[in-house]
Amino acid sequence: MYDILYLFKGMLVGLMVSIPLGPMGVLIIQKTLHKGALSGFIAGMGAASADFFYASVAAFGLGYVINTVQTHELLLQIIGGIFLLCIGLKIYFDNPIRQIRQRRQGRVSKTGLLGDYLSLFFLTVSNPITVVVFMAVFAGMSVFGESSSLLGELLVVIGVLLGGGVWWYTLSTLVNIFRKKFRLRVLITINRVSGLVITILGALVILAAFAPFKNLVIH
Image 1 (cartoon, one colour):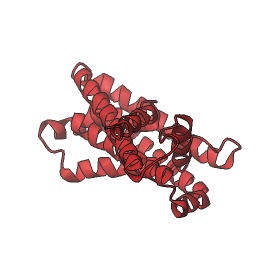
Image 2 (cartoon, rainbow, N blue to C red):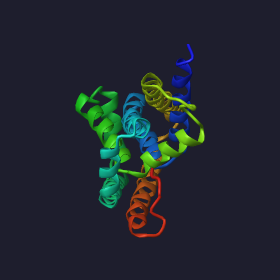
Image 3 (spheres, rainbow, N blue to C red):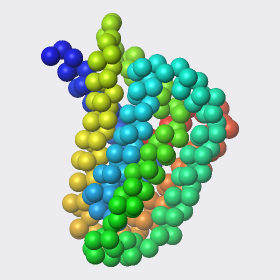
Image 4 (cartoon, helix red, strand yellow):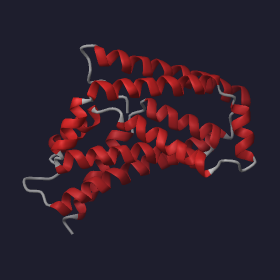
């Protein structure tokens, strides 16, 4: 019974990491507005899966993975920034009318959903600072207590995935409810603003890779 507490601790950590509205949140809101709640939720699970990966690395102390991430930290951050730039520009110049028509006609394909998932997964996993964040949170909250077990560690990382999933489901559902009240002109404006914000954040991520404040978290 006590082991179940690890699951709830992990869920709390997953919520803490996911709730701050960074570029991932903006992307998921944008996908929900133009493609529906399912697309937003699937994209959110891509981000949650990346959190699950880094939480596992932090919890199980996978030294080789940590060393590899640290070795290629600069490259990963630059790739993530370029990816954000490209997505931001695509969103800015995209036509929301076409996306809405496709959704109304039931043309949100499995390939599109897989693309939503993978794009958010790789964007989130390209930020190597995430593993440091999880290490700090695990230590600061004493998630594992004085003595940890393999089962406890496993339940914590599963909880991180579930906590992130709960948040992204909640966010995509709420945005989808209000989406129906938006007029087309408002959606176009949101598209432009979202694309501009994500493009700027992508540029900042790339600049941060060469600046003293390298610990920029883009999640």
